[in-house]
Image (spheres, rainbow, N blue to C red):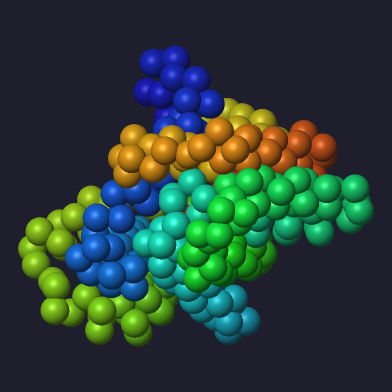
Length: 302
């Protein structure tokens, strides 16, 4: 931490780097999906992430009380299902569109928990952006891909709520060393059958590299950024994540949006930023992982 301060690295740059890492991981996962399938990719990535967290942090098992178990298991299962759904979505629809649809989940949680009816305008605005992104008037909408992205968004919303409860008892890497293994086991149910015949040392090494990109690196960067930024500033900045998803989709996957789709992503980003600037109370984020980010931008395990 002292080293970061000496180099004068601005905290916003670490937050942006975290988002880039998350979306780069998603973009690079598309290649693995072609080999191991979305469920197989989810299982391999989560298993590698679980091994990394178990290697760097001892699970605080002695601190776990009986009433903590259902919440910890629920958070792990939600993380696994969210990852499965998101990877299934990006197999079928562009990365930027999937991220924008998934973003509706935390936006809706933020609006509902704000106890301000006017806050519902931001999820509606983001939904309008998603319509522009999907361009249904062209008649080429992949309903299954959109449904998977919406399911991932629902999982992200549930993840935020469960993480808030877990955050009352556990924080940081310790929480991840408890929940990510559960997520890996959840994904294994469908992931092992899908990937079993494709396993190789190259695939396992790729999974390990992707696990470093997410959740390990984003967690460290976001934790450092949050120590030097207000939660509102951080949440506003994290609203850029759908736009970064579009950017990485263009650069890595050559998914070039139309002008109308660019307008759609602008609406989603505006809605995310406005929800923070409008004074919504942030929730502790998810542990990809941990309990550290504001609500609409909580880091996710996808």
